[in-house]
Image (tube, rainbow, N blue to C red; front, top):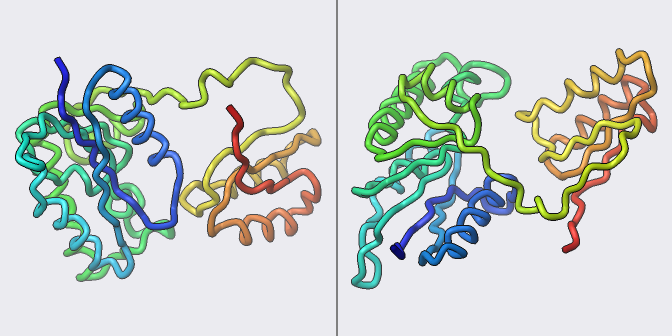
Length: 243
């Protein structure tokens, strides 16, 4: 049966990464199966932290049950705060929650610390998450680790559903070489500095090749220099694929 489906996606303007590829791949796969599918994105702002609640409530306020006089049969929500949207047929394929209020809370990876304001924001997000995720007719996550976090903090069960790579047809097994490939956005939250520290302790001349862009690149390059890694840490930037 053909369905009219909306995929709800969070968009940080000018930032593109794995979550965006996941959403577009899901849209294309559903269209290939004959469904009518579109993506609805709302911008997400987390600085200052008070803006987080505004971004979350924006999803709660929009009407996504009808469009142009026709019903939307189903919504599929991805990462925070898109799953706050209201719909009688809501499925969640959870990329991640706002980890700054969960396992990153009051750490260097979070903008929220143990102040009265931060505690209020955190408690509000925890309450909104619990309510909105409980309302989903089905809950999936992109990994077992995300499912474990969801159960640990929210006591909600889910089914891990690993997303296939949109470039799967281009992947093939080849020979091993003397490097570790790190394809990721260069962001402090990715903790790519751990790879650099590991290289500095390696007993071989294994290298690391970083492909991607992001705000943490200057710090990572500086750290590589401080660890005297020289050409063992290479930053190639964003690389385009060719079909």
